Length: 78
Image 1 (cartoon, helix red, strand yellow):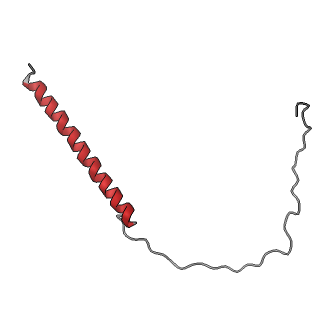
Image 2 (image 1 turned 180 degrees about the horizontal axis):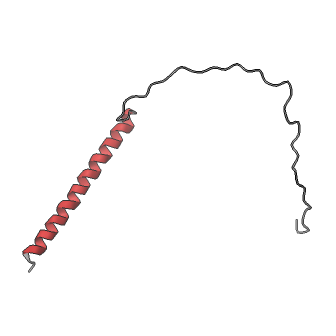
Image 3 (image 1 turned 60 degrees about the horizontal axis):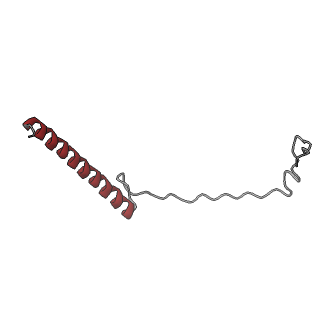
């Protein structure tokens, strides 16, 4: 037979596990609702004005041809 103390420990463990499941379910529900609405708890996001710039491109590219600074010889096995 199980002692009364053993039964209490089992019941306490079961209650703790059930509470954890409830907490996980609540957190998942909040995450899903935020995902569906697209809003965060802090509030909706605001959009500012679009910045435009006008610059003229250079007449010719700054680098015409790239060249490596170091050259190496090809090994015989290649």
